[in-house]
Length: 248
Image 1 (cartoon, one colour):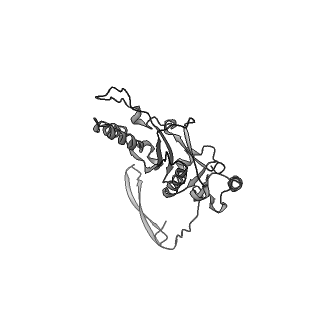
Image 2: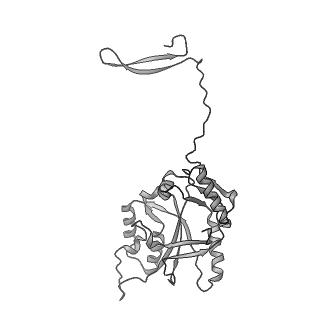
């Protein structure tokens, strides 16, 4: 992205989860029409997370321990499209940016059935809303999606790239917390060489251990109960005294 200065939005049909774009995979019956299927559309998207740090996310998306996390805010993503659309006045594209809602599989199916039957416009709204619904098993991702629809389908590659300035859009780049100091230095130099502001690059501290000082006063008398077995194998409670004249 730093080299090409382009944000890539993949066709969501390429996303691995079988429940992605699930409405278009359902059995759709068209009533009172000579048509036997709905008109096609191409939806493109990116997935972000609201999670500042996550052990699961690093381990899933950085299996080789050399990935980075980039940080931004929604208005900056919208500004990217605002600039891009200046050259697409005949076909402007505006994304929907929203949090993903998580539900059980049964809840999703009940929601679909509760909207049946519906008119054509209601179906389009259902399609759009479904793109921001995932199964509860993915709830740890705390996902935010950037999704738009392109009806012209001029992109044969299965993705659309939008030009942008990484230094204006990314407020921070964070390197995998498992990277060694030398690996981090190498990655930072590589990112800087590609034009990113070095002051906005850091290594995640997720696995850093920071000691705190704990003081224990051994001169302070105290007692606490413990449960022990007597010689007959029966449980009973005893009081243990510590740091006093009766301690043992």
